[in-house]
Image (cartoon, rainbow, N blue to C red; front, side):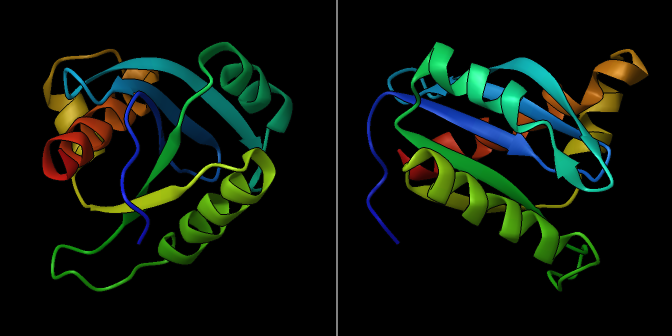
Length: 134
């Protein structure tokens, strides 16, 4: 695994219909929700993702890998891994994966409106990664 770079990091909570996006900083080890990218038939809106990359110029990518509570893979694990690999190839940034099981539930528990949980789930997994990597 490559060493985690300093600076702005972009995080993704992958889903087949919606992908939550968060932006974080290695210095403060904090992140904030940025956007929700729509996906149709499992195909992300790459134009929207490109706009976010151009705006933030992140030095690395973090993608949540959905896992079962026992740590085993589930149906979305491989599609999320493939999405991360596509991001890395397309934007030429290192990609880091973090296992995540309950980020969407945690976002819902923060009393957020249902339509806003994807980007907040991305924020939670990115903050978890930042705190473990730095």
